[in-house]
Length: 334
Image (cartoon, rainbow, N blue to C red; front, side):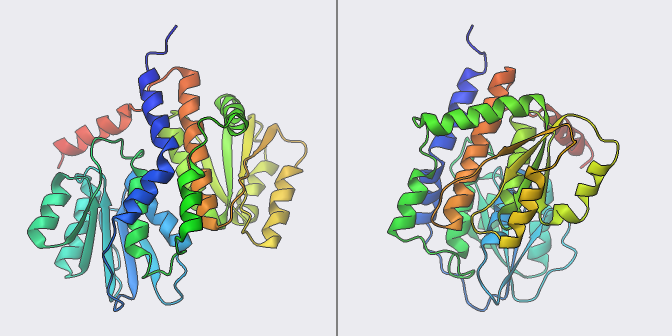
């Protein structure tokens, strides 16, 4: 029997397998140089659009420029000498538009990343720098395009890892695993386990956005609840909950980094060796020559897992009925 959502799985996996190329294609289009008078970067965006901000925040190497993120209707504090980067794939996200309007009212320098919608029109009307994304993608599937664009825009300002020819080739090949049975078998095995048992995703804090992205992809593509937490922070609070009466069968999904603090390794070892709990430990490691390559590889792999779980359940990975329902209510009460 052919799965009725087979075409959706195929298209989403196609985006995953070309994600490295999509990232580099978006990056290569950027020629804009940001003024060095900028002292702060404020990135505004929601959901699959805004998560790229979390990646840039952990990759920021500048000792002088801070990156802050706003995922709300209003910005409680706008720093001085700030560059506002506003991201919405659709261009119609109401929270993002309100954040944009606040930055405009405050007279801030603004860059917009979108595929169209109201934000595109506002950017043209107000003379903002506008970076266009390819259209007709799922916002969460557009992530490589969004991150590549954002990386290119902030590369010099935030002293991000320089993408030389070697790293370029690594990124291109980072998502090209569609014919690699050794990788696919590992990811498919993890998919089967996560389908059955509740996942606690534990990520090294220096690559924390990967855990956040994985949790969001499980929520949206797989329609599964999940929790993502970071080590070593997890060890100072959430770990104590396991000393209580919680006995639901669950998984610890470990996403360590080759670049994490040596002391963080001890925290991961502690989780690996926990006894007396109704759990299984699953670990996903990648080989890489840069933290950028590591983060991207882990992102593509976990994206694939979320689609594979949807396929195992025979559910539509694209449909988001609860979000559609909420947007309808918000529209009526605008």
